[in-house]
Length: 234
Ligand SMILES: *Cc1c(COP(=O)(O)O)cnc(C)c1O
Image 1 (spheres, rainbow, N blue to C red):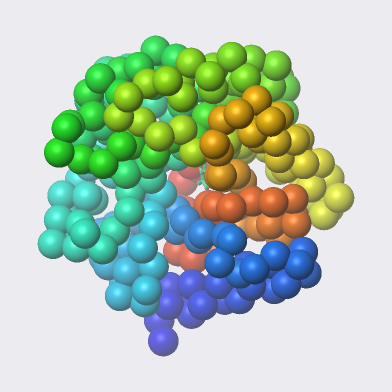
Image 2: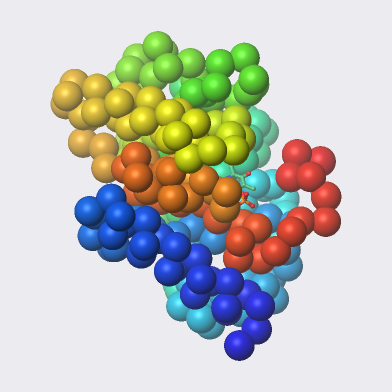
């Protein structure tokens, strides 16, 4: 087995163990393989090992990879998890299946208007800033409800839930805290009548804490593809 195949298997085992520890069925949690900075070959290898959902941060890099993997398009699900500027919404609406990082109504509105009719609705999460001033992206927790009710009314999008990128924390309990906040926010929206089912939270270092707090999608890069050559924000 190659590194990627072995790492994928190990990651699936981590998810299964975390689900078991939380008393949750294993199929509750979808593994999103974050392939940013890695090439199409790495995606191809993971796909051959049964991986379907891939996450990308940078729009142009993702479009190149999606094109290089066009032969596998129906076996792949592409998720944008990085910041989205309004001048890139059209290509994103045309090429992706999911966007996790919407934090402004204007972006959602453009994605809805630009989603081609022949494609199914674009699946959407709102990114929430659960770490206060430490992070620049994400809607503030107290503004999520208003944004969600506006976005939920847009055609050609399906609002699925919430996403967050908390500040890194070393111990399990500190990792759980921001995930618990996101889950509580999702519950509030559900109580307001929105049919939401997705909590996109947890990365390589805090997968277990996220699953313990109800994650339904974990976004895993390093643990599958290895260390990235440069910082993700570069
Ligand atoms: C890079 C990235 C990940 C994956 O992080 P790892 O620590 O490599 O697992 C997950 N989510 C987002 C938004 C990212 O940018």
